Amino acid sequence: MEEMSELIAKNSLFAGLPDSTIQLAVGCAQNVTFEPGARILVEGEPADTLYLLRRGRVALQVQRPSGKPLIIETIGPNSVLGWSWLVPPYRWQFDGVAIDPVGAIAIDGTCLRAKADADAVFGYELLRRISGVLLSRLQSTRVRLLDLYGHSLDD
Amino acid sequence: MTETEHVSPGPFVPSRYRVVDRKTENSDITTLWLEPVDRPIAPFKAGQFNMLTAFGVGEVAISISSAPGAPGAIEHTVRDVGAVSHALASSQIGDVVGLRGPFGTDWGLESLTGCNVVVVVGGIGLAPLRGAMRYLAENPAPDRKVVLRVGARLPDQIVFPEEMERWREMGVDVEVTVDVADAAWTGHVGVVTQILTELPFDGAGAVALVCGPEIMMRFSARSLIDLGVSPENIRVSLERNMQCGIALCGHCQLGPFLLCRDGPVVPYAPLAAELITEIER
Image 1 (tube, rainbow over the protein chains, first blue to last red):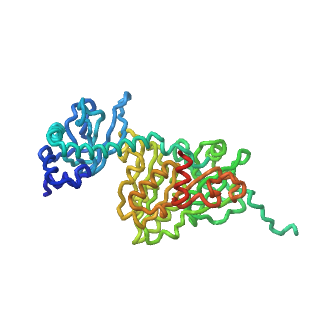
Image 2: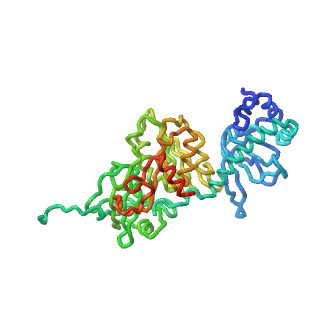
Image 3: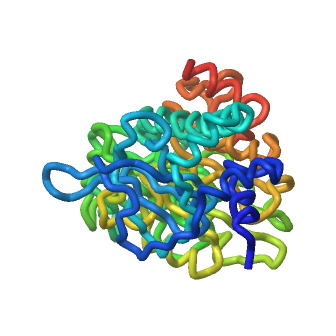
Protein backbone atom coordinates (compact mmCIF):
# COMPACT_ATOMS: atom_id res chain seq x y z
CA MET A 1 0.00 0.00 0.00
CA GLU A 2 1.28 3.43 -0.89
CA GLU A 3 2.21 5.82 1.85
CA MET A 4 0.16 8.99 2.22
CA SER A 5 3.23 11.05 1.35
CA GLU A 6 3.58 9.17 -1.96
CA LEU A 7 -0.09 9.69 -2.79
CA ILE A 8 0.14 13.41 -2.08
CA ALA A 9 3.36 13.75 -4.06
CA LYS A 10 1.60 12.23 -7.10
CA ASN A 11 -0.91 15.06 -7.28
CA SER A 12 0.07 17.91 -9.57
CA LEU A 13 -0.36 20.44 -6.74
CA PHE A 14 2.41 18.85 -4.67
CA ALA A 15 4.49 17.11 -7.35
CA GLY A 16 8.21 17.79 -7.11
CA LEU A 17 8.14 19.23 -3.61
CA PRO A 18 10.74 17.95 -1.11
CA ASP A 19 9.59 15.25 1.26
CA SER A 20 9.91 17.57 4.26
CA THR A 21 7.32 19.85 2.65
CA ILE A 22 5.06 16.95 1.71
CA GLN A 23 5.16 15.81 5.32
CA LEU A 24 3.57 19.11 6.35
CA ALA A 25 0.53 18.19 4.27
CA VAL A 26 0.59 14.55 5.40
CA GLY A 27 -0.13 15.66 8.95
CA CYS A 28 -3.42 17.19 7.78
CA ALA A 29 -4.48 14.46 5.34
CA GLN A 30 -6.66 11.39 5.25
CA ASN A 31 -7.98 9.03 2.58
CA VAL A 32 -11.68 9.36 1.73
CA THR A 33 -14.08 7.71 -0.70
CA PHE A 34 -17.48 8.76 -2.02
CA GLU A 35 -20.23 6.85 -3.79
CA PRO A 36 -21.73 8.22 -7.02
CA GLY A 37 -24.23 10.94 -6.18
CA ALA A 38 -22.56 11.89 -2.90
CA ARG A 39 -22.43 15.64 -2.24
CA ILE A 40 -18.81 16.27 -1.40
CA LEU A 41 -19.18 20.05 -1.30
CA VAL A 42 -22.46 21.69 -0.27
CA GLU A 43 -23.17 25.26 -1.35
CA GLY A 44 -23.25 27.61 1.64
CA GLU A 45 -21.78 25.09 4.08
CA PRO A 46 -18.43 25.70 5.81
CA ALA A 47 -15.49 24.99 3.53
CA ASP A 48 -12.78 23.19 5.43
CA THR A 49 -11.19 20.70 3.05
CA LEU A 50 -8.89 20.56 0.05
CA TYR A 51 -9.49 17.40 -1.98
CA LEU A 52 -6.81 15.84 -4.16
CA LEU A 53 -8.77 13.58 -6.50
CA ARG A 54 -7.17 10.19 -7.10
CA ARG A 55 -9.95 8.53 -9.09
CA GLY A 56 -13.45 9.32 -10.30
CA ARG A 57 -14.99 12.61 -11.37
CA VAL A 58 -16.83 15.31 -9.49
CA ALA A 59 -19.42 17.65 -11.02
CA LEU A 60 -19.36 21.22 -9.76
CA GLN A 61 -22.94 22.36 -9.91
CA VAL A 62 -25.31 25.07 -8.84
CA GLN A 63 -28.94 24.67 -7.86
CA ARG A 64 -31.39 26.45 -10.15
CA PRO A 65 -34.73 27.91 -9.08
CA SER A 66 -36.39 25.23 -11.21
CA GLY A 67 -34.87 22.64 -8.92
CA LYS A 68 -32.67 21.01 -11.53
CA PRO A 69 -28.98 21.62 -10.87
CA LEU A 70 -26.75 22.99 -13.59
CA ILE A 71 -23.28 21.47 -13.98
CA ILE A 72 -20.68 24.13 -14.61
CA GLU A 73 -17.49 22.08 -14.56
CA THR A 74 -16.22 18.53 -14.18
CA ILE A 75 -13.13 17.84 -12.10
CA GLY A 76 -11.25 14.64 -12.88
CA PRO A 77 -8.47 12.44 -11.46
CA ASN A 78 -5.22 14.12 -10.39
CA SER A 79 -7.07 17.43 -10.14
CA VAL A 80 -7.73 19.57 -7.11
CA LEU A 81 -11.22 20.15 -5.75
CA GLY A 82 -12.23 22.94 -3.43
CA TRP A 83 -10.68 26.38 -2.92
CA SER A 84 -13.08 28.08 -0.56
CA TRP A 85 -11.17 26.86 2.54
CA LEU A 86 -8.36 29.18 1.47
CA VAL A 87 -9.95 32.60 2.01
CA PRO A 88 -12.79 33.98 4.16
CA PRO A 89 -15.67 33.48 4.56
CA TYR A 90 -14.67 29.79 4.15
CA ARG A 91 -17.96 28.65 2.63
CA TRP A 92 -18.46 26.49 -0.46
CA GLN A 93 -19.77 28.48 -3.40
CA PHE A 94 -20.99 25.46 -5.39
CA ASP A 95 -22.09 21.90 -4.84
CA GLY A 96 -19.60 19.18 -5.70
CA VAL A 97 -21.28 15.86 -6.54
CA ALA A 98 -19.51 12.58 -7.26
CA ILE A 99 -20.27 11.29 -10.76
CA ASP A 100 -18.31 8.05 -10.34
CA PRO A 101 -16.94 6.26 -7.30
CA VAL A 102 -14.47 8.87 -6.07
CA GLY A 103 -11.25 8.29 -4.19
CA ALA A 104 -9.48 11.33 -2.81
CA ILE A 105 -7.10 12.63 -0.23
CA ALA A 106 -8.87 15.11 2.02
CA ILE A 107 -6.56 17.71 3.51
CA ASP A 108 -7.91 19.71 6.44
CA GLY A 109 -7.98 23.34 5.29
CA THR A 110 -7.62 24.88 8.74
CA CYS A 111 -4.63 22.66 9.47
CA LEU A 112 -3.02 23.46 6.12
CA ARG A 113 -3.57 27.21 6.56
CA ALA A 114 -1.98 27.07 10.00
CA LYS A 115 1.10 25.31 8.63
CA ALA A 116 1.33 27.76 5.75
CA ASP A 117 1.11 30.65 8.24
CA ALA A 118 3.82 29.14 10.41
CA ASP A 119 6.21 28.33 7.53
CA ALA A 120 6.42 31.20 5.06
CA VAL A 121 8.44 29.19 2.53
CA PHE A 122 5.84 26.43 2.51
CA GLY A 123 3.02 28.96 2.48
CA TYR A 124 4.48 30.82 -0.50
CA GLU A 125 5.09 27.64 -2.47
CA LEU A 126 1.59 26.37 -1.71
CA LEU A 127 -0.02 29.64 -2.78
CA ARG A 128 2.18 29.82 -5.90
CA ARG A 129 1.00 26.39 -6.97
CA ILE A 130 -2.61 27.03 -6.10
CA SER A 131 -2.41 30.27 -8.10
CA GLY A 132 -1.26 28.27 -11.11
CA VAL A 133 -4.26 25.97 -10.90
CA LEU A 134 -6.63 28.88 -10.30
CA LEU A 135 -5.17 30.75 -13.29
CA SER A 136 -5.72 27.71 -15.48
CA ARG A 137 -9.32 27.44 -14.28
CA LEU A 138 -9.86 31.19 -14.80
CA GLN A 139 -8.51 31.01 -18.35
CA SER A 140 -10.72 28.03 -19.15
CA THR A 141 -13.71 29.95 -17.82
CA ARG A 142 -12.80 32.98 -19.94
CA VAL A 143 -12.48 30.80 -23.02
CA ARG A 144 -15.90 29.35 -22.28
CA LEU A 145 -17.33 32.87 -22.15
CA LEU A 146 -16.30 33.22 -25.79
CA ASP A 147 -19.01 30.74 -26.75
CA LEU A 148 -16.37 28.72 -28.55
CA TYR A 149 -18.73 26.72 -30.74
CA GLY A 150 -21.29 29.39 -31.49
CA HIS A 151 -19.99 30.40 -34.90
CA SER A 152 -21.35 29.02 -38.14
CA LEU A 153 -19.12 27.01 -40.39
CA ASP A 154 -21.34 26.82 -43.41
CA ASP A 155 -22.84 30.21 -44.07
CA MET B 1 -21.08 19.52 -83.33
CA THR B 2 -23.79 16.92 -83.75
CA GLU B 3 -26.89 16.71 -81.64
CA THR B 4 -25.64 13.52 -79.97
CA GLU B 5 -22.20 14.89 -79.05
CA HIS B 6 -21.69 15.31 -75.30
CA VAL B 7 -21.52 18.89 -74.18
CA SER B 8 -19.84 19.66 -70.88
CA PRO B 9 -22.21 21.74 -68.81
CA GLY B 10 -19.33 23.77 -67.35
CA PRO B 11 -18.20 24.20 -63.78
CA PHE B 12 -21.04 26.47 -62.71
CA VAL B 13 -23.89 24.18 -63.69
CA PRO B 14 -25.00 22.01 -60.77
CA SER B 15 -25.95 18.39 -61.09
CA ARG B 16 -29.42 17.55 -59.88
CA TYR B 17 -29.53 15.39 -56.76
CA ARG B 18 -32.59 14.02 -55.05
CA VAL B 19 -33.03 13.95 -51.29
CA VAL B 20 -33.52 10.24 -50.55
CA ASP B 21 -33.34 10.51 -46.77
CA ARG B 22 -32.95 13.12 -44.08
CA LYS B 23 -32.29 13.21 -40.36
CA THR B 24 -32.78 16.04 -37.93
CA GLU B 25 -29.60 15.89 -35.84
CA ASN B 26 -30.72 18.61 -33.43
CA SER B 27 -32.68 21.86 -33.41
CA ASP B 28 -30.69 23.50 -36.21
CA ILE B 29 -28.64 20.74 -37.84
CA THR B 30 -29.95 18.34 -40.49
CA THR B 31 -28.24 15.63 -42.50
CA LEU B 32 -29.38 15.04 -46.08
CA TRP B 33 -28.76 11.87 -48.12
CA LEU B 34 -28.48 12.78 -51.82
CA GLU B 35 -28.51 10.59 -54.92
CA PRO B 36 -27.88 11.80 -58.47
CA VAL B 37 -30.88 12.32 -60.71
CA ASP B 38 -28.79 12.28 -63.86
CA ARG B 39 -25.15 13.40 -63.80
CA PRO B 40 -23.18 12.34 -60.67
CA ILE B 41 -20.30 14.44 -59.47
CA ALA B 42 -16.73 13.09 -59.43
CA PRO B 43 -15.51 10.96 -56.49
CA PHE B 44 -14.57 13.00 -53.43
CA LYS B 45 -12.03 12.80 -50.62
CA ALA B 46 -12.71 13.29 -46.91
CA GLY B 47 -12.61 16.96 -46.02
CA GLN B 48 -13.71 18.32 -49.40
CA PHE B 49 -16.91 20.30 -49.85
CA ASN B 50 -19.67 20.70 -52.40
CA MET B 51 -21.68 23.72 -53.47
CA LEU B 52 -25.32 22.92 -52.77
CA THR B 53 -28.10 24.80 -54.51
CA ALA B 54 -31.55 25.35 -53.11
CA PHE B 55 -33.25 26.21 -56.40
CA GLY B 56 -34.75 29.66 -56.36
CA VAL B 57 -32.91 30.61 -53.18
CA GLY B 58 -29.17 30.31 -53.72
CA GLU B 59 -26.03 28.28 -53.36
CA VAL B 60 -23.85 27.56 -50.34
CA ALA B 61 -20.74 25.53 -49.52
CA ILE B 62 -21.42 22.46 -47.42
CA SER B 63 -18.85 19.92 -46.28
CA ILE B 64 -19.38 16.32 -47.31
CA SER B 65 -20.09 14.28 -44.19
CA SER B 66 -20.05 10.76 -45.60
CA ALA B 67 -16.97 8.61 -46.13
CA PRO B 68 -15.26 8.65 -49.52
CA GLY B 69 -15.94 5.58 -51.60
CA ALA B 70 -18.81 4.48 -49.40
CA PRO B 71 -21.70 2.95 -51.33
CA GLY B 72 -25.05 4.69 -51.39
CA ALA B 73 -26.09 8.28 -51.14
CA ILE B 74 -23.71 11.13 -50.43
CA GLU B 75 -24.32 12.87 -47.10
CA HIS B 76 -24.22 16.55 -46.24
CA THR B 77 -24.85 17.94 -42.79
CA VAL B 78 -26.39 21.40 -42.90
CA ARG B 79 -26.62 23.95 -40.12
CA ASP B 80 -29.69 26.14 -40.52
CA VAL B 81 -28.26 29.63 -40.14
CA GLY B 82 -29.22 31.54 -43.32
CA ALA B 83 -31.72 31.64 -46.14
CA VAL B 84 -29.97 29.02 -48.29
CA SER B 85 -29.04 26.66 -45.49
CA HIS B 86 -32.58 27.01 -44.13
CA ALA B 87 -34.04 26.01 -47.48
CA LEU B 88 -31.65 23.06 -47.72
CA ALA B 89 -32.23 21.97 -44.13
CA SER B 90 -35.97 22.13 -44.80
CA SER B 91 -35.71 19.86 -47.87
CA GLN B 92 -37.93 16.83 -47.73
CA ILE B 93 -37.45 13.35 -49.16
CA GLY B 94 -38.07 13.53 -52.91
CA ASP B 95 -36.99 17.16 -53.26
CA VAL B 96 -34.29 17.98 -55.79
CA VAL B 97 -31.29 20.15 -54.98
CA GLY B 98 -28.30 21.19 -57.04
CA LEU B 99 -24.78 20.01 -56.39
CA ARG B 100 -21.39 21.12 -57.74
CA GLY B 101 -18.07 19.71 -56.67
CA PRO B 102 -16.16 18.23 -55.06
CA PHE B 103 -13.93 21.18 -54.28
CA GLY B 104 -10.88 21.93 -52.21
CA THR B 105 -8.23 20.07 -50.30
CA ASP B 106 -8.77 17.01 -48.10
CA TRP B 107 -7.54 15.61 -44.78
CA GLY B 108 -4.86 13.49 -46.48
CA LEU B 109 -5.98 10.15 -45.05
CA GLU B 110 -3.43 8.28 -47.13
CA SER B 111 -0.67 9.95 -45.09
CA LEU B 112 -2.07 8.70 -41.76
CA THR B 113 -0.44 5.30 -41.78
CA GLY B 114 2.03 4.52 -39.04
CA CYS B 115 1.21 7.56 -36.95
CA ASN B 116 -1.19 8.28 -34.12
CA VAL B 117 -4.05 10.63 -34.89
CA VAL B 118 -5.78 13.22 -32.72
CA VAL B 119 -9.08 14.55 -34.03
CA VAL B 120 -10.44 17.66 -32.31
CA VAL B 121 -13.82 19.08 -33.22
CA GLY B 122 -16.10 21.78 -31.93
CA GLY B 123 -19.79 22.27 -32.64
CA ILE B 124 -20.76 21.09 -36.11
CA GLY B 125 -17.05 20.65 -36.90
CA LEU B 126 -17.47 16.89 -36.74
CA ALA B 127 -19.40 16.97 -40.02
CA PRO B 128 -16.36 17.73 -42.23
CA LEU B 129 -14.38 15.15 -40.25
CA ARG B 130 -17.03 12.46 -40.13
CA GLY B 131 -15.85 10.81 -43.34
CA ALA B 132 -12.27 10.78 -42.06
CA MET B 133 -13.40 9.39 -38.69
CA ARG B 134 -15.37 6.62 -40.39
CA TYR B 135 -12.32 5.72 -42.43
CA LEU B 136 -10.00 5.73 -39.40
CA ALA B 137 -12.42 3.71 -37.25
CA GLU B 138 -13.23 1.17 -39.95
CA ASN B 139 -9.62 0.72 -41.07
CA PRO B 140 -7.71 0.20 -37.81
CA ALA B 141 -3.94 -0.13 -38.00
CA PRO B 142 -1.83 -1.84 -35.31
CA ASP B 143 0.60 1.06 -35.23
CA ARG B 144 -2.07 3.79 -35.09
CA LYS B 145 -4.16 4.98 -32.18
CA VAL B 146 -6.99 7.38 -32.82
CA VAL B 147 -8.21 9.92 -30.28
CA LEU B 148 -11.36 11.97 -30.79
CA ARG B 149 -12.06 15.00 -28.60
CA VAL B 150 -15.39 16.74 -29.10
CA GLY B 151 -16.67 20.00 -27.65
CA ALA B 152 -20.21 21.36 -27.81
CA ARG B 153 -22.08 24.09 -26.00
CA LEU B 154 -24.90 21.88 -24.75
CA PRO B 155 -25.52 18.11 -24.71
CA ASP B 156 -28.35 18.41 -27.25
CA GLN B 157 -25.97 20.17 -29.66
CA ILE B 158 -23.69 17.15 -29.97
CA VAL B 159 -23.94 15.74 -33.47
CA PHE B 160 -23.63 12.06 -34.39
CA PRO B 161 -23.65 10.75 -30.77
CA GLU B 162 -24.63 7.21 -31.81
CA GLU B 163 -21.85 7.11 -34.37
CA MET B 164 -19.32 8.29 -31.77
CA GLU B 165 -20.41 5.40 -29.57
CA ARG B 166 -19.79 2.99 -32.45
CA TRP B 167 -16.33 4.47 -33.01
CA ARG B 168 -15.62 4.03 -29.30
CA GLU B 169 -16.60 0.36 -29.58
CA MET B 170 -14.25 0.08 -32.56
CA GLY B 171 -11.32 1.22 -30.46
CA VAL B 172 -11.31 4.98 -30.88
CA ASP B 173 -10.58 6.90 -27.67
CA VAL B 174 -13.59 9.23 -27.63
CA GLU B 175 -14.23 11.98 -25.10
CA VAL B 176 -16.93 14.63 -25.28
CA THR B 177 -17.27 17.80 -23.26
CA VAL B 178 -19.99 20.44 -23.10
CA ASP B 179 -19.90 23.98 -21.77
CA VAL B 180 -22.80 23.50 -19.44
CA ALA B 181 -25.21 20.66 -18.63
CA ASP B 182 -27.89 19.50 -16.27
CA ALA B 183 -27.49 16.61 -13.88
CA ALA B 184 -28.60 14.08 -16.50
CA TRP B 185 -25.27 14.58 -18.27
CA THR B 186 -22.57 12.27 -16.93
CA GLY B 187 -19.83 13.33 -19.31
CA HIS B 188 -17.29 16.08 -18.95
CA VAL B 189 -18.24 19.74 -18.49
CA GLY B 190 -15.71 22.36 -19.58
CA VAL B 191 -14.12 23.63 -22.77
CA VAL B 192 -12.57 21.24 -25.27
CA THR B 193 -9.04 22.27 -24.28
CA GLN B 194 -9.69 20.83 -20.81
CA ILE B 195 -9.93 17.34 -22.32
CA LEU B 196 -6.78 18.02 -24.32
CA THR B 197 -4.42 18.00 -21.36
CA GLU B 198 -3.03 14.53 -22.01
CA LEU B 199 -2.87 11.93 -24.77
CA PRO B 200 -2.55 8.13 -24.54
CA PHE B 201 0.58 8.40 -26.68
CA ASP B 202 3.51 10.69 -27.31
CA GLY B 203 2.32 13.81 -29.12
CA ALA B 204 5.55 13.98 -31.11
CA GLY B 205 4.94 12.31 -34.44
CA ALA B 206 1.17 12.38 -34.07
CA VAL B 207 -1.01 14.12 -36.64
CA ALA B 208 -3.92 16.30 -35.51
CA LEU B 209 -7.02 17.07 -37.54
CA VAL B 210 -8.94 20.04 -36.15
CA CYS B 211 -12.24 21.49 -37.24
CA GLY B 212 -14.55 24.01 -35.64
CA PRO B 213 -14.86 27.75 -35.24
CA GLU B 214 -11.48 29.41 -35.74
CA ILE B 215 -11.19 30.62 -32.18
CA MET B 216 -11.71 27.05 -30.98
CA MET B 217 -9.11 25.76 -33.45
CA ARG B 218 -6.61 28.34 -32.23
CA PHE B 219 -6.94 27.31 -28.59
CA SER B 220 -6.97 23.62 -29.51
CA ALA B 221 -3.82 23.99 -31.61
CA ARG B 222 -2.04 25.60 -28.65
CA SER B 223 -3.07 22.71 -26.40
CA LEU B 224 -1.89 20.19 -28.99
CA ILE B 225 1.46 21.93 -29.29
CA ASP B 226 1.77 21.85 -25.48
CA LEU B 227 1.24 18.08 -25.74
CA GLY B 228 4.16 17.80 -28.12
CA VAL B 229 2.32 17.70 -31.43
CA SER B 230 4.39 19.46 -34.07
CA PRO B 231 2.61 22.57 -35.45
CA GLU B 232 3.45 21.27 -38.93
CA ASN B 233 1.46 18.11 -38.14
CA ILE B 234 -1.71 19.99 -37.24
CA ARG B 235 -4.24 20.33 -40.05
CA VAL B 236 -7.16 22.71 -39.73
CA SER B 237 -10.24 23.28 -41.84
CA LEU B 238 -10.79 26.95 -42.69
CA GLU B 239 -13.91 28.25 -44.34
CA ARG B 240 -14.82 31.56 -45.86
CA ASN B 241 -17.48 32.74 -48.24
CA MET B 242 -17.00 30.06 -50.89
CA GLN B 243 -18.86 31.02 -54.07
CA CYS B 244 -17.33 29.89 -57.36
CA GLY B 245 -15.50 26.86 -55.92
CA ILE B 246 -12.78 27.09 -58.57
CA ALA B 247 -10.60 29.98 -57.34
CA LEU B 248 -11.95 32.57 -59.75
CA CYS B 249 -14.12 34.97 -57.81
CA GLY B 250 -11.86 35.65 -54.81
CA HIS B 251 -14.65 35.75 -52.21
CA CYS B 252 -12.93 33.10 -50.12
CA GLN B 253 -9.53 34.76 -50.04
CA LEU B 254 -7.66 34.53 -46.75
CA GLY B 255 -4.18 36.00 -47.02
CA PRO B 256 -2.48 34.16 -49.85
CA PHE B 257 -5.09 31.39 -49.83
CA LEU B 258 -8.12 31.06 -52.02
CA LEU B 259 -9.75 28.63 -49.65
CA CYS B 260 -12.07 26.98 -52.14
CA ARG B 261 -8.96 25.72 -53.93
CA ASP B 262 -6.11 25.91 -51.35
CA GLY B 263 -8.39 24.90 -48.47
CA PRO B 264 -10.50 24.15 -46.63
CA VAL B 265 -7.87 21.83 -45.12
CA VAL B 266 -4.58 23.63 -44.61
CA PRO B 267 -1.55 23.05 -42.38
CA TYR B 268 -1.78 25.03 -39.15
CA ALA B 269 1.84 26.15 -39.33
CA PRO B 270 3.15 28.52 -40.29
CA LEU B 271 0.59 30.52 -42.20
CA ALA B 272 -2.83 29.49 -40.92
CA ALA B 273 -1.74 30.07 -37.32
CA GLU B 274 -0.85 33.68 -38.11
CA LEU B 275 -3.92 34.29 -40.23
CA ILE B 276 -6.54 33.10 -37.76
CA THR B 277 -4.78 34.91 -34.93
CA GLU B 278 -4.60 38.20 -36.84
CA ILE B 279 -8.20 38.06 -37.89
CA GLU B 280 -9.47 37.58 -34.38
CA ARG B 281 -7.33 40.26 -32.74
